[in-house]
Image: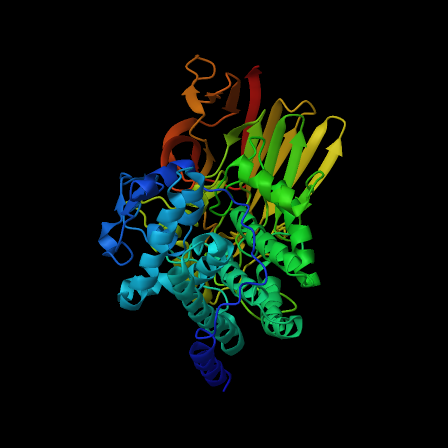
Length: 616
């Protein structure tokens, strides 16, 4: 019934509203985000460049074949997963094309004819809209693309329609139709099927939180900009606000993080919420308290994940972003002060000693059925096993990092990146022995359910809960991390104990792997490999020390500033292996990783390693 009423309402507005004369918009939202000069220059040359992909940008470019999106990136494989390669075709240029993000870039180009070119391209899009093919419609009418396009058209409406009555009439009619389509899709999705309020995380929807907020941003901005009385306008907005607040309670955690536990999602969410809040303030509409509380918690959380170089951490497949973008966002939010020491619900710890910064993940994997107490809706996300992962930066430079997450990764790549191999943490690998077959974790779990035996003795000790504890002393900072992710599959517990010196020049750690019980068939980990990885950013060069006393156990890390850090272990060999870095949006860069590999022959197992600065 609700869906039927929304359809009737759309048809009535389509017949009546677009035919009425344009009376002007009540307000014009502001877009403070600058465009790119290089991309704007390329647009004036009729080429749309998104990272390493190109599309023609001329008359009739809106519905070309999907195969025209060319990628210059060479195929690269994830280390230890040679069958997973980066996808060359991408819909990202098409999203930028139909979301009208190129308006910012054309304005940033500084060309005196850019305004005329904007009007020409917008008019060409409006005339080509009725003849869009199936692929083009699937992109152009997607909720996030539709909301972003409607938002930018409201921002640029006065300039686009300057001395152009034909464009003004066609654009006003098209914006009304797009707003009705967006209203029906957003409201029907949240009212009729709340479990699908947010799209799943996939190659088609790389950022579900950003996509959902962009849809609400375009819809709320359109309703606030209508040249109607305050009573009629507020009545229209009040129909959307309850669904909007419900989505906010589902996406964001009380400590400022998101249910995806990805720092990039905090940036995307806070940026869209800031645009919505500024539009409400400009339209003299009261900002919802739930929305303001979410923003007040997200700004300190965003500062929490910033490294010494100004970028964000790469946990859960995030991106680092440019420091200027983060500074602008925090300035608009009015967030000042020091970041918190921990995000207890998101599961992260932040430790800083002088110039050394340590970020630790003790929250394990994000749940695929994360639910909030005030909402029964669920967000479908990819589980990423990054328990006990860490990232380190020193003196404004990154030292230890994660692989990150390329925004256009396909589902195959995401399946490989969700395991611990993409993070600087411990991992358990099954060894293929031709003489003895070791079952996988799934097979072991299935066999355990089928077996009717009971343990002959009680477990030696219970697995500690997945938590972290911190102690600040005169001799340094102690951090104890526990993870029970392997409890059900391998009957083991992982621990990581870290000590930082007061001057920030020395970091020592112990990685433990403990068996939680004695069973007749023995431990499931016997015969497997315990692998500890430390991924390096592309700017850090690793070189093994060849001295007789430290050969194979010590590696020097050379930073771009000339500083040298040394990584060493007590009794285990350190290997330098290849890796990839996906922390910069649209770039795939080769890098290195430090690997400690040892066979599990007996438990408990302990690995000692140290990271110290040896040259200023």
